[in-house]
Length: 125
Image 1 (spheres, rainbow, N blue to C red):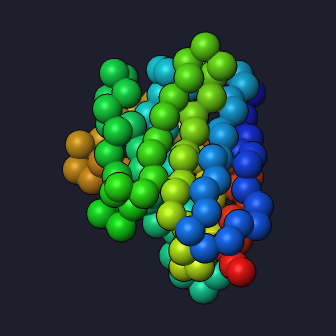
Image 2: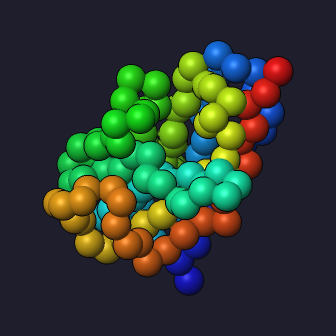
């Protein structure tokens, strides 16, 4: 059974950093399209970043370029989201997702078959 589990969320002060992890079981993340999403209260789920090729080419939604970094460790079967310079508006539940197919348009804001349960990130002083 394919399963994704996020971890690493928590409370952080504005300007701080967090690294989220997404561990997979039942399949190899390196063979799947992986994306990170977030959903804030009262808002729609939005794509943060994703890999757009098996080679691990990253793509970022405009709002996150320069602050967030997606990375993959195939040996650990884990995908990471490094988040820097966090702002209160980054407060949301963050999800990772996986799918057998890669999309080209749109790259990240697209359907995924498999989702984790999410991890809460709260940015507050």
